[in-house]
Amino acid sequence: MSVESFRAISPSEFFYRNRELAGFSNPARALYQSVRELTENALDATDAHGILPEINISIDKSDGQGEDIYSITVQDNGIGIPPHYVPQAFGMVLFSSKYTLRQTRGMFGLGAKMVVLYGQITVGKPVEVITSPIKSTRIYGFRLMIDIKNNEPVVLERSSWRKESDWHGTVVKVSILGDWQRSKSKIIDYIKRTHIIAPYATIYFKDPEGKIYLFKRVTELIPKPPRETKPHPIGVDLEMLKMMLTSTRRRTILEFLENDFQGVGRKTAENILAIAGLRSDRNPRRLSQEEIERLAESIKKYDGFRRPSADHLSPIGDEILRIGLSNMFKPEFVDAITRKPTSYAGHAVIVETGIAYGGSVPIANDPTEILLLRFANKIPLLYDEGSDVSFKIVSTMDWRDYEVEFPAPIAVLVHVCSTKIPYKGVGKESIADVPEIEAEIRNGLREVARRLRNYLSRKKREEEAARRAYSIIKYIPEISRSLSTIVGVDSGESIIEEKLLSLARAKLGVGIKSVKDVVIGVE
Image (cartoon, rainbow, N blue to C red; front, side, top):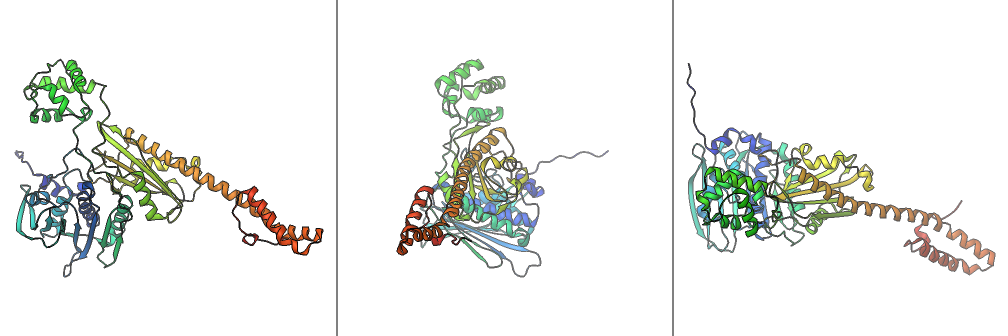
């Protein structure tokens, strides 16, 4: 009889075996995912710290290789990385600066490490990193790989040199197996959509064919950077409560509740302890398992908490969204709104919605073809649109209620920001239809759609008024000639014509300057 063997594997080895979970399922998807992950890191290193981003992205085909090997380089002008953190930041899966309660584009501590890991698996070359933190007088260079078995960085080369300019930021270069032809449209679309939601960034992109795309900054308005916050009691489960109790420095359980959570004051803390049957002077690190369970249950039962704070979120803002949509589509109508914060599972959520109509917006034949621009924490979502909650809402809205008649040139933007986005997978490409978030998206779209309806209704009234005016004004020359003949004044025709046109303008509310602007001549 065979004996079952057991062993543990490291996070690196897990994702080495299951890289499709992080979006690296094939060369085309991997090339897109690599550009996306490195670009998101670059943007987080800039706008999250109040820096107007300058991002350079290049993809180069490696010569002399039988397979489709591509070198990806992404450079930013961000805060840089302290040199002692660089090996872990790029060589240890699940090591990250993003395991805090504030909004960031990344959230799993995978991103750049998965790019490095995939490149190492498919090409075998180390990642090259150059970085210089703000206020540092030196630039630091690294060449490193990942010890997959032990989930540790392997530094092959480390160097530093004195700066000759005031540059700060990070440059990452990695070689991977990719498929440019199959991923080309997605990568270009990703960068375009990134610039829609970040029009305050300048993004330079050079593709493997040598074509250059330059998306210039069109505004210096930048979203408010997020601030780290404390957890909200509603979002804390039993295991998180245990970890917080173990690591707290508070001397009493009352102090712990008051100071280690947001939205908990003295009175609220006393009420929770009363429900749990715990003395307020108990040492939080010495609670028994049964007492911790009672405390967790009392938190769950208590219904007097304030809503979670949204200080740790960084919505784009309606003005920046309007600028981004206007810059990309030059529409005849554009508007956007930022909804008030709400909460989901104890985490603050802010939903932003926008609509662009006309201009270069693609024509949609029905609601399922509407150009849907989906974003989560400022990340464009390009895959799995059909399973996203936004698609469900947009495709089932009765657009006739908003004067939209298909075919129609309409684009819809939805941005969800939260420290807890309910993604449907590790690839972070679609958002689940959670009731709280679905309601916010639906209400946000309805509000902007009502503004579109007002615009379209006004436009329709103006067009109808213009048609009526034209149908009347085109007869003015004939009437003027007839009246001039009747009164026997040869030189009065032009005077009569001008008087009639002036009267028509006043009565019909149109801005026609001359009857020559209207088709004249009556059979």
